[in-house]
Length: 203
Image (tube, rainbow, N blue to C red; front, side, top):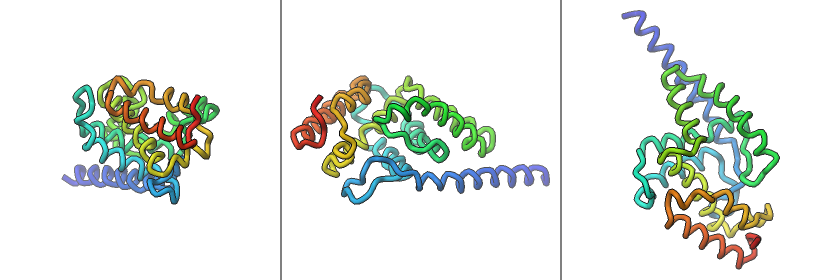
């Protein structure tokens, strides 16, 4: 009985250490502005927004997906940025080292947890990265659609600041139609609107 209590306490301490450590994700700021354009969002806000959007947008996906799994993916997919930092979507130089930086971060951060939970999170993170299952495709759609919606709401602010081209946005989102045609149509509609306004370059 005492041994079981000791193991349970050790497990709780590991979980608390992880919970405290991932609080740092609130200080990782992205290049996307909040809808009101006043400041840029952080990774924690982004991940919460994706998890909530998963519940709302599930009906528009072509394939059935395990909603709980998608929500967990959404909540953990950017935790590696605590160590690796945020890599802007259109930063080619940063993209070259992104995988190496993020794998190292995943080893450390998920390694803080009890082995079973650490393995569960790590496997889900790898599944998200692989972009093959219905759940990973849905989570990726959310990860790409949400910043586009915020760009629209904030007046194309981030696109204009970075001189982003429609071709870059389309390339980044080229697999969205396999998951949801209606979402892809909406994305194109938003892009074209911001080309007309001069916030997004046409080529």
